[in-house]
Image (cartoon, rainbow, N blue to C red):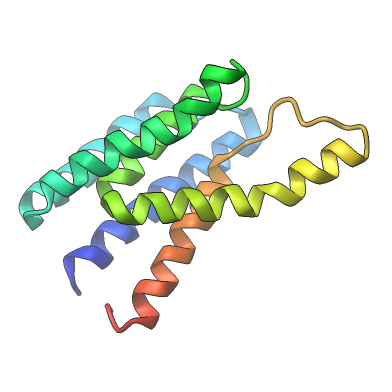
Length: 146
């Protein structure tokens, strides 16, 4: 198993666990974030991609923090922290794609909410981030990266 796939797998595991609590409680526990941070950071250091992991973490957090600058409740802090952890596990280029997939996957829900008059004030975004990581993993495996 190659290091990229291991990082994606750990990132996916963290995103899936975050999705469960985010859907149930509308929050992502800091204990999960810290555990994911330790696991992905250790993999990045041992795997030798720590520079890319650090850049991916920062970029992931910035990409999700930007909407929060416009509207405070646009993105939760747990989602921003989760994007940082996922960025460590996936790297800089992959986190951009994963967040792009997440935004595209979330659009129908936002549109439905707007059209039905049920504006989604608090939408758990971590399931969409997990979808983005799954999409990246599928491309990685399809490209022969298994």
